[in-house]
Length: 262
Image (cartoon, rainbow, N blue to C red; front, side, top):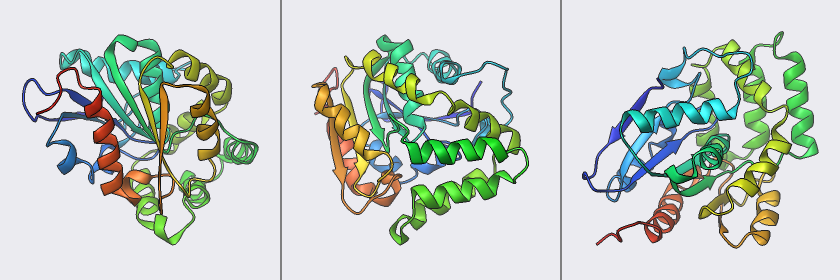
């Protein structure tokens, strides 16, 4: 089973499950804990190959569906019937996959730095990564991708946090995650259709140049989807502007509570 940690507000409080991005771990939510725990029960997980789930083995045809099932297995073990999902970066794909495969278990989706489409520039970078990743130290590639995705001085804390966490990921695990990106575009297009009935908020940094344009286009086509853009923030907007991220995400989740908070 994946490594997990729970923070209990009260027994009848609703659950929020936090999903980190590739190369991160559950520790990247450190700026959300104090705020979220005032309102919700919190479930933190380390996805396969990350943090304290670093030794989780892969099988040949493992996919995002398998990664999502591992998170649901934790929900089952803890007897959590339903949860709100807050994800960042590639964690948003795992969250949306959970919503596709187990819609009855998901109350809302809050998708920060969401990846819903990979443009030509990003496809090119990923293709290069896949072609050389067996020969080039993965930390060189990861640092390169981190600088491309989070290039500004104001993104430095986010960039360093993910780079330092990525040092705990093995080359083998890194290769497996990069391989998942090969067919990600058609898969992501399918996810948007499959999850359109679940209330979804995209939270994007205004400086997230690679990933924000397709999100803006998507939101225009689905009335159940909404977007909030955070100023002076990049891809990892929950670290760049945590106070704004916390307020926006909490307000959205509380609007969809089964029992309104007092």
